Amino acid sequence: MRVILKHDVKGLGKAGQEAEVAEGYARNYLIPKGLAVEASKGNIKTLRHQEDVKKKKEARQLEEARRAAERLGAAYLAIRTKVGESGKLFGSVTAKDISESIKAQLGLEIDKKNIGLEEPIKSVGSYTVPIWLHQGVEVNLKVDVVAE
Image 1 (cartoon, rainbow, N blue to C red):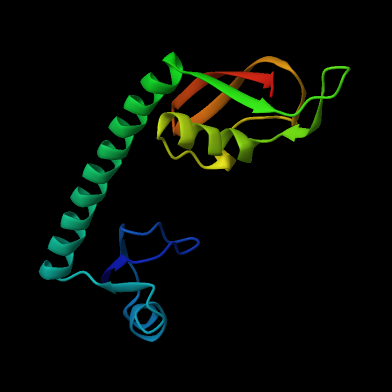
Image 2: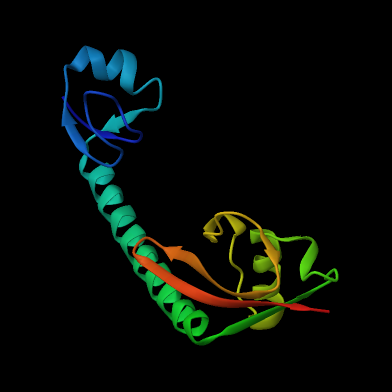
């Protein structure tokens, strides 16, 4: 029996793929558990439509990431913070602070998990911080930490 997998099934295939399985396995396990549907003409047509929608969405997200990368690559981010006499910060500048500054100064929403800050910034100076916008789209942002 041919089925279309709705979820990844170990040893059988990934979601969206068609698979040939024993009828009992399909009727007694895969279909009742919601892991697959029968590969009828209507279900195959629906699957193809969902794949097309997913590809278009992925292409749109990639294009948006490239536009954001252009803006971030040309941008300069200044973060003002309180500093002690020796040039050390009171506290530190974290990925969350950089994300909030990007939103405030540039109007772009970047998740703090996508900011490649290895450890928090603890002193005044200029830094280059990698930002991952999409798979294959990475940009280095120039960040200056200055005294308030």
